[in-house]
Length: 398
Image 1 (cartoon, helix red, strand yellow):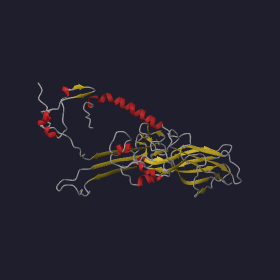
Image 2 (cartoon, one colour; image 1 turned 120 degrees about the vertical axis):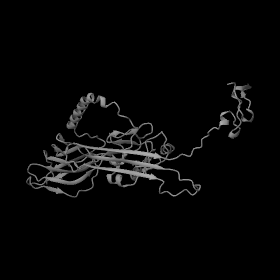
Image 3 (tube, helix red, strand yellow; image 1 turned 90 degrees about the vertical axis):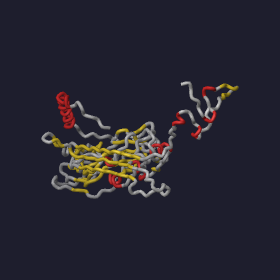
Image 4 (cartoon, helix red, strand yellow; image 1 turned 135 degrees about the vertical axis):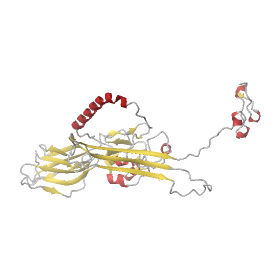
């Protein structure tokens, strides 16, 4: 749709004060904004600080640092030597611990996945604060604090695997216990039917069955928010592929934050900005230029037209307002857009009446006998009406 902007130039003077106010409020909100995370789409880190003899060290300082944004979070071990970081955005991190009279210890870069609960225990050696012990290799992280089971599909898999129609549901079958299912309702969606979730017409997608439940028993979350269509039991808004950082298929939903369904929970996390400006643009085109002619197509008849475009872009980085605000290491943004255009001819036979048929002569229409509805008479428990001779409707008094 194209809208004209006529008439706005005359009111520019009256709009400017409101624009200044809105801009000031937006800037104020931006400067005061903190980190907003959701419980079910975040991760957590915990552990215990001990000395060489195995005794706990209370009051130790633990620093969790994001590799991509340099944002630091600090915690202090309690009387039992335990510490915890909650509501952590999935990504790459390092964690370090230090205490008075002990050498600091640091775990090298590791990755936190969505809904992961990672445990990093420290064993500090007696020494000075100037010598840092870095732990390079660690064992695979096992979740020992929750009953949740699931598989995380990482960014590389989301970005690199080819997807017909760029629908992330095709990746769900990469996880154990997931079986793709195509139902009659799904076929209607694929053909452009209105009952169902938004999918690219003619593309491949899957609303799977998880652990033996029906394919309408799953739940969808995006960044901790409900992305669930209650009527269709599918997602309400399909996330853009290039905006997905990762997602987890939770197949054993015993944790309190999950529920409402018998099947699995698909937990999607979108990307965030980093200290470096980055973005992408894409264009996926499908048409008949390189398609062979159908063998049964009559000679001289052109191939049926087919054209499909999926296009868009994404951009993220630190919030920078020249001379006003530098958001590096503090405030970030990320946005994405995707468009879809699809055209395909439909071979549908339509009856276009001739002038004679419009005048009441239906003899050449190859239709069954037609009857006069105005001469209907009751015969016992049924009705009868006379036929129009030759399927010719006589002209009325008008």
